[in-house]
Length: 174
Image (cartoon, rainbow, N blue to C red; front, side):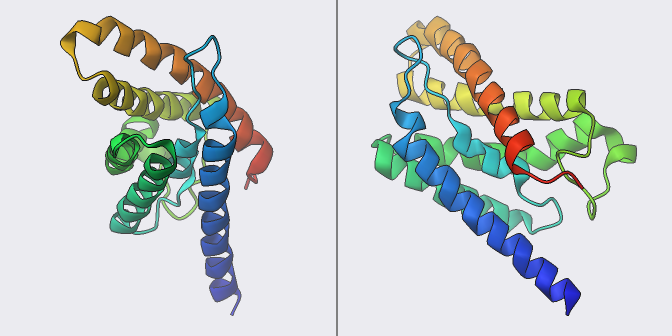
C-alpha cells in the first residue's frame, strides 16, 4: 500500500507542477520583459523535474501539451510546443552525458541530490537548446542570427537563475 501511495503522490506532484508552471508562465512570466525583450521561460522546469524512471513517451506527450498550452495563451503558433518536446526528447542523453553512468541511479534520481555544478550544467544545456529553438523559429531568418544568439544567451541567464532558485525553494532534497 505504501508503494501505491508514493506513486500517487508523485503523479499528483507532477500534475500540480504542470498546472502551476503553466499558470506562472502565462500569468506572470509572459508579462515580465527585462530590458524590454528578455522574457524568462520557467515552464521548462517541468522537463527538468519529471521523474527519470517514468515513461519517455509520457514525458514527450505531456511536454508537448504543456508547450501547446503555452502557445495557446501566448499566440506563438507552436514554437513552445516544438522546443519543449525537443528538450524532453534529449533530456536523458544529456543527463547521462553530464552525470556519466556511475552517477545515474534511475530509481533514486533527484536533481537536488547531484552536485550543483552538474545540475547547473544540465539545466543550462537544456535551457540554451530550448531558447535557441524558440528564438530561431520566432525570427526564422539568417539575417537575425545575432539577435537569435543574443536573445538566447540573455534570456537563458534569467531563466536559469529563476529556475535554479525555484528548484531549490520548491523541491525536496532526498
